[in-house]
Length: 217
Image (cartoon, rainbow, N blue to C red):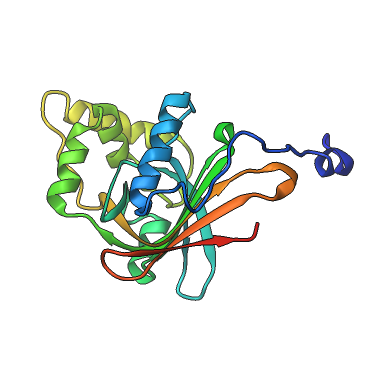
């Protein structure tokens, strides 16, 4: 290996950019997320909407991957994917998830835990039709998470679909659509010096109220 153990052990950064206090955060975590996400957008971070999505099988085996946030409101956080993918199959049987945003340029992280449900067919269709045509074809061309012999299958599917839909609208496939993550816990993490980071957590108390607590780093 080119990277030795000593190099890895000495990779560290002392965070000093900001601080986070219980008295400074908003009472509603979605509003706090909106504030932080707006700052991430303005900072020029590459794909600030990239988030880790963690799922688990019914026997507790976890899996994580990066997906893109495509909307959020007081109900939760929305992303789109193939319902027949590994994550889609796991979500159908175990609709409990975790999301993580990491914005190193701002020395910030947001963790979200909650349940998940599909968005309406109408919402999925509206978003699908707003995507570039190339992305629409990609959703149809790829049997996501399935074993394939080689890349030529994808390229063959792509060319055939591109020809088929050259002069017509591409319908949203039944196996593709959106999910809404309904948060129960949202943690805002701000890096601080000497690893004494700020961790402010919102825990849902009832439909309209959240309890705010501080956790030790």
